[in-house]
Amino acid sequence: MNAVLQPRPHRPIRELPDSLISQIAAGEVVERPASVVRELLDNALDAGARAVVVRLVGGGIRSVAVEDDGDGIDASELSLALRRHATSKIGSLDDLEGVATLGFRGEALAAIASVADVAITARTADAAHATRIDAASGELDAAARAVGTTVEVRELFFSTPARRKFLKTESTELAHALEAVRRQALARSDVSFAVWHDGKAVARWPAAADDDRHRDVLGRDFAEHSRPVAVDLGTLRIAGRVGTPESARGRADTQYLYVNGRPVRDKLVGHAIRAAYEDVLHSGRHPAWLLFVDLAAEQVDVNVHPAKAEVRFREPRTVHEAVRRAVTAALARPIEAAQGDGATTTTTATATATAPAAAATPPSQASIAFATGAITPLRADEPLAAWWTAARSMPETAGSSDPADAATALGSAVAQIGGAFILAENAHGLVIVDMHAAHERVVYERLKADLDGGVGATGTVQALLVPLTFAANATEIATAESHGDALRELGLDLAPVGAQTLALRAVPAALAGGDGVELSRSVLAEVAQMGSTTSLARARDGLLATMACHAAVRANRKLQVGEMNALLRDMERTDRADQCNHGRPTWRQIDWRDLDRLFWRGR
Image (cartoon, rainbow, N blue to C red; front, side, top):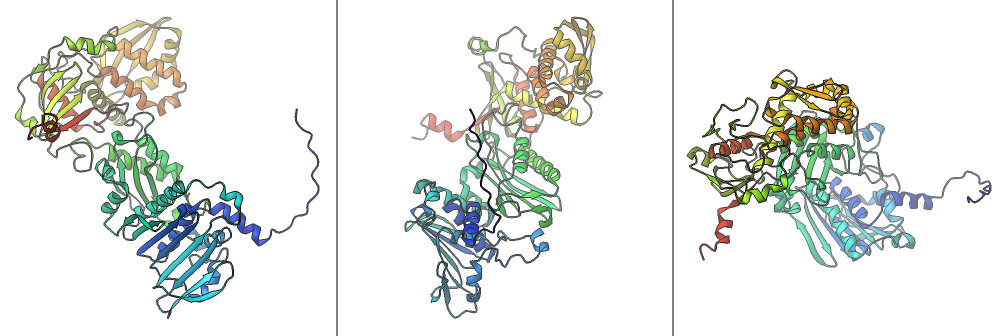
C-alpha cells in the first residue's frame, strides 16, 4: 500500500551559497584520485610541459602532487587560478566553439580545493623565484623551484567524510590513477611521464616516437597483434592501431579513443568500431584498439560533460562511417598484405595462384579453385558429429607440391589429416588450416563482393536447368512470398508453386554445388525470425554467412594436393581470411623453433 504523500512546506527560491555550489561542482568533476590526476595533467599539458611527474601517497587518497616544466603561473594570477570559472584558455563564445586545449571550463582547481587541501607552487620564466599559494588561507609565500608548476592535493574528501567512504582500497585507487596517466601518455609521446607511489617509481615513459611510446605503454603483445589504421580524408583523419580478432580479450580494458588529442568515451565511435569487427570476432570477446580521430575543432563539441570525457560531433554519420570503413579496411587485409603489421601471418611473399592438380572439370566461375567434380557437398542427413570417428579410418592425402607455392604466405600443402585439416609448409615452419572454416570465409567474402557490386540478381547467379522443388510448411511458403525480392537480391530465386511446394530456380554460382533444399530452408528460417524486409537488409551479411557455410567444403572430403594449394592461394587473396564467419581462426603457424623445441633438437 502506498503511503499518503504529505504536502511539503512552502520553501522560497533562493541563491545557493558559494560553498554549496563548490561542493556540487566538485561532485561533477572529482570522483576519485584519478579524477584529480586527469585534471592536473590536462593543465600541465596545456601549459606546454615536456616532462610531468606524478607523486601519489596512499593510492592518491592521502596525496596527489603533479609537477611539470611548463610555462608556470604568474604570481599575480595564482589567487585567480583557484576561483571558479577562471581560465586563460577561452574568453568568448567563439573560443568555446573552437576549443583546442584539453582544459577550458576553469572549474577543476576550484572544485578540487573545495574537497581537499590544495597548494600551488609556480614560477614563470621571467620570475626571480617561485611563489606558493595555500588554497585554504589564500596566503602567498616565496618558494624554490624551476620554471613550471606543482599542484599538491592532500587528504581528498577530508571535508566530506561520506564521500570518502565510497573510495576503494589504495591499490584500486592507484590502478585508476595510473590508468589516467597512461591515457595521456598514449596521446603525448613527445612528453615524458613518471609516476611515483609512496616514494617508489611505478611507471616511467620517456619521450619517444609514437610507435615506441605505444609499445612501451600497451606492451609488445599489442604491437605484434594489431594492424595500423591510417585514413586521411582532408577534414577528417583517423590513425592508430586495432587488435587482430584472435587477440581479442574477455574484457574491454584495452580500448583507447582520442578526439583531437583528448581521451574520451564515445558511443558513436565505439559502435562504428564494433560494427567493423562484426563478422570476424568470436562472441563475447572484446577487441583492443588505440584510435586517434582528428577533425576541425568547430566540428566537435567538447563542452558536453563536466569531466570532459564525452564529445558530440556536428556530423555524426560522417564520423561513424569513416571510422567503420577505416577499421574494416585494416582488418580486411588479405593474409599476404597484412605482413609486417604485427598480425599472425608469417611471410611477405606474393601469393601465386596454382591450378588444381587433379581437376576433373574446370572450376566454377565464382567458387574456390576446386574441381567441382572432386568435391561434393555434405549430405543433409550426414551428422557433423561423425567428423572425428570417420576421420580415424580415412587415409591422409599427400603428394608432391609445386615449388612456387613454398614461397607464398601460407606455403605449400603437404597433407590432409583428420578429414578436416590441411598441413602446409612455408618458410617459417608448419601451417595448419581448418579447411571448412577457411573455405567458408572465401565463399562468404565472394558473395558479399558480388552483392556489393550489384551482381546479386543478374551477375554471378546460376539458373538451374530443372527447378528444384521440395515440400514446404506454411511458414516457409509465407516467407518466400513476402520476401521474394529480397531473396533474389541475395541470388536465391525461390517461389511457391503450390500450397505446400516451393521451387528453387537459381542460386549464387558460388553455391551451385551445394544442397539447394537445405540451403533454402536455412535461409527461410533466418528470414522468418527477422521479420521485416528492413531487418533483412540490415542482417544481409548474416544470411550470406549462412549461405557460405552450406557451400564450404566439409569434413571428410578427400582433397588432392592441388586443391589444397588452391584453397591456400584463395585464402591469401581473400579479405579477413584469418577468421571464419563466426570469428574462429582459420589457420595457425608453428615455426621451426617451436618444432625444434618440441623434439629437443639442438640439445
